[in-house]
Image (spheres, rainbow, N blue to C red):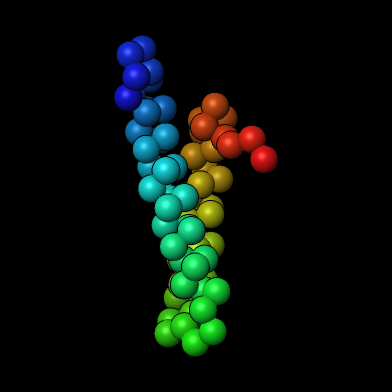
Amino acid sequence: MTVGEDPEAAQGRMFLIELEIRATWISQQLSKKNVQGRRRLTAELNSVHKNIDKIETRFPQQRKRK
């Protein structure tokens, strides 16, 4: 958290970073040919993306420029 940063925004930023790391890991796992639990990983990835969207909606300043 930086000086003057809203604690909720700081928490959202940190959670967003963790979610992005998780989404990257899941995507890497899904890119493998024979993945155990592909359905579970796909469902988790969808959930992670929904949570990322919720954080970016709540804290637009956290949205990455694409």
